[in-house]
Length: 220
Image 1 (cartoon, rainbow, N blue to C red):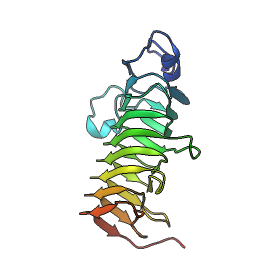
Image 2: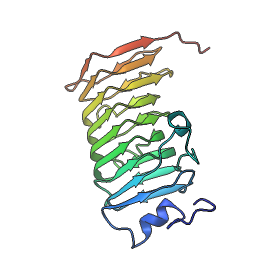
Image 3: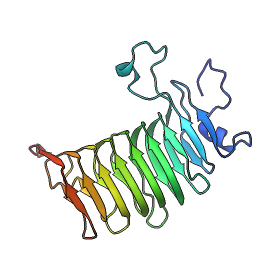
């Protein structure tokens, strides 16, 4: 959806809905394209954008703007999908899906939806810049690693299991704990916070080799 570009589709949802796009296909989103307000995936797709912070990486881009969308939901039928190189200004949500890879995106936040309605299995979130935190319920096996995360990491103690939080930089300036989870391995993270660092619940959780940087609470 970019003036002057003869693209196949005007939005990501239009591409998903067309019969020309089938399971296993790859959709490329161009630099500077606004790909729509909401996209609901019900097919196995790989979605690839140009990346983000492009001028910091290479000043030779003719158009250094990212491809952006507001919200993306991975719903039934979209298992084994990949989202890479996009800017998501709203949320990402999972509903009844397995084996989703979210990699190298700029993301506002992850939305858990209503309890019992948002869940999945084998979710990988890696190498992203996430500036609104992560909150997820009912995920069976989730790996969160090599991300920069600004905000709380809440994978819902009591609602998830087999959580790995590893090699992230987590910056949290709120009044709650920075990490809330259960049945979790939390290892090799850099955590910057002025409050309590974590609440790992009681089920098989470990917190090892993390670097914690505490800074003064400047709120009044």
